[in-house]
Structures are given as C-alpha cells and as structure tokens.
Length: 161
View (tube, rainbow, N blue to C red):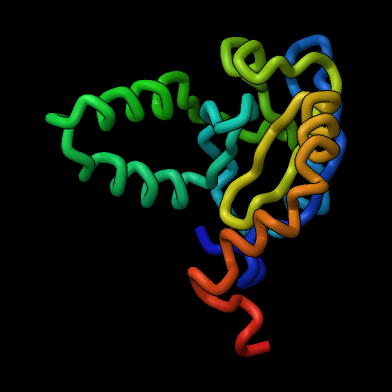
C-alpha cells in the first residue's frame, strides 16, 4: 500500500480509549491512506515503551528483512523475541476504530488517553503522559541529536532543498 503522499504519515493526535479498549483513528490520518486501501495493520511493541503501527505492506517489507537475520547469533534471536513477540494484526472497524490488544496496552502503560504520533512509514502509540514527559525530557538535546544523526558524519538532508 502506498501512501497518498510521498512523505509518509504526518501528524500528532490525542485519542482516548473507550470501555471496550478501542480508539478512533483520526480522520486526518485515514485521509492519508489511498482510496480502497486495506484496513488491516500490524501493531507491535516499539522502543521507549510505546507501540508501533505499520501498514501490512510496510510490515511485510520489515519482516522480510528481519527473517534474513542470522538466527545462529544469540543477539538476533533476542531481538526477534523482543520485537516480534506480541505483533498483532488489527483491522479498522466500520466506525474507523482499532481494538488495542490488552497485552500491548499494558506493555506501553497506556491508560485512557494516548498520543497517536506519525513517524513517516509508521505510527507510534504512546500513553499521553509518558509521551509528553519523553518529549520534554529530550527537547533540550534535540539539536545535538540532529547533528549526530544528520550532521557531517552522515549526509546533509537539506543539501538539495
């Protein structure tokens, strides 16, 4: 599935979980999906105690790469267990909601309110308080992080702008 734009998913939204453990996927996010797109996604454990949502197409490409890793390496086996354990296919219902699997909700410490944060080819789901604490705690080092990730040692992402 290709996104409706060439830059991936965009946006940050606050959503609430209902009594049946469902949450409404923001309409502006759904509009970023191509018409007739598959309504199935994969949710799995992410890094920093959040959850990650992938389109089926993105997950397929990612799992293909993960399956190429050498299982004779104990670190590879450990990574696969931690990353793939709990990965679950979810479907949008007729009202545009996902059912959040309870074990994944507990892993991420998501209570009632959460943040739906677009990350290009994937979405992160965070407990609202944890997300805002993470952003606040890391804001001061953002410039240094940008220099490390996109600085002189790597590539200039603004070179052709």
